[in-house]
Length: 179
Image 1 (cartoon, rainbow, N blue to C red):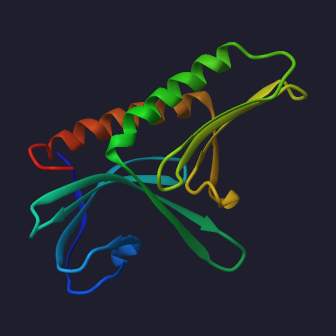
Image 2: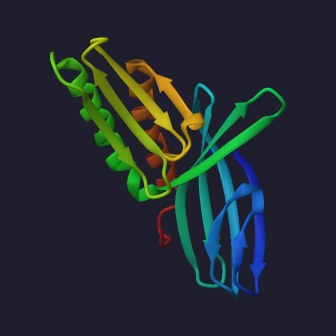
């Protein structure tokens, strides 16, 4: 059973940017949204949450995965937040498989970069440096923010792939409605 961790109901009467619970999406006027968050798991400092956004008036549902990472600098703790659409889960899983395959066949003399970028900027990637003869695997909450990078090992990458599968299965509980 999923644990519901937050919910909000928002009625919009004019165009603006929705910023409830740090959700940042441009929305159309005259919409009534019910947004629910469910714990899905974490990898190190990144928390994954299933985000179900229902437009109550239009009877539509958008399923996505919300990512939260607490970045601690010298003075304060700053959250970094992003999300990706449920339709990108399969591509992310295939990216994990491709990275794991490439790690087994390390090139000897050239640099290799593997990267998948979601629509919102969440990135999964790996690169091989021939000088160090080493692969580096990473998750990045925002492709334009170098401080949102988390370096992971192959076990964490396999766990990430497994977590994506579990998230996809949990989202099936919300089937029967439009994404």
